Length: 299
Ligand SMILES: [Zn+2]
Figure (tube, rainbow, N blue to C red):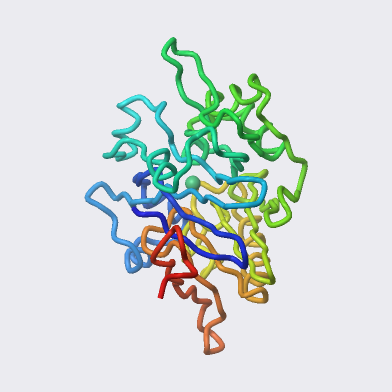
């Protein structure tokens, strides 16, 4: 995927990807019957749904901010096959395509610490030890998320892996947040519980324009259109619904551009209520600029 570039006021934002993994349809749609969800997305022969592993690069005066890091390069081959990861991880190549080397990244924000969002935080040295992939970056994560990741239970231990975050603490790169926080004048994080207790979205605000990278608060557009559609992966689904309700209403009031992390078909859009009383809310896709380098000059 070539980067998708958007301009939020004076702030340039790029969507890039680490690849596509496949998740069981039952996990992706929880209680929603397949006869309903297969009208929206077709599963493969193994009942799996492709999920984009999207990251976001925000250009700020303080330097580039990277939001989430995909699965990264540490997974054993067997696990890569289970996830249907056919291609090698490509996040670093896509960053290079934007002109950034890992050492250039100033901040990394993890929406949460599930493996498909922070696997690329760290990488192996030749001797098998681990180091931060982005050696000069401060990595931001919520305190509650870190606690849940550090002490997983039977349900969460297959996605919370200490090798994705403990080396950051050892290297002194971890910045632990206790709630909503302003990262730069244009970028802030907001705690949005439900998918995990310490999940956070990333809000970009510039010159009266607003965008939000939703992470797994609503990884697919349909999760925001239909509040009851929550993935079985959410640890607190009833909280997810209320989080989505307030995000949806806020985004409608603000006319905010929404970035959907796992949606293959709809990376970015705006939401509005349905036209009839019982019609559900709709996300309208918003196209990216043609050029990641010079959006203003594009026709
Ligand atoms: Zn995810």
